[in-house]
Length: 198
Picture: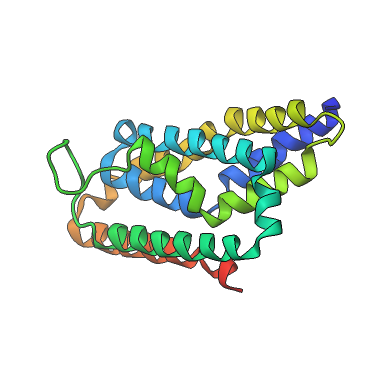
């Protein structure tokens, strides 16, 4: 991969990782509700799960979805339903989580990693990256380079959203403000389904 192509890939990785989407809205809400430290497994799960999705798409899953469009429809339905469930949980959260004993807990590493496989934005990012930045003459190397670029860029990009959430914790420590913030985040997360429904 030429240096200018890899640089373009890094820019694409950054822009697609840092812009609003399901992961980033959930991290913003998690930063507010649980703090940065308790959100780290969620952030690491996003990076790990997305890397596994990229590798799968790069090594043939994208072609399988193209060959069998019904699988794509099933993925949309399952992903949309799970996203709405997560939006509901965020919208109904009413207290800042302080310790590990509360009813509400931050998303775990495994749950965040698994979510990447039903996250519509993650699929669009993975399919686009593999279509644009891989080279058929060096498929293994370029698939790994695309995955590497996202691993390097993804964690710092998504951690910004958790950091924003932490910065808002003091302002949102009043229950009424927190309630409306969580409702807004739940609605924003649900709204990320709109491009998928068009």
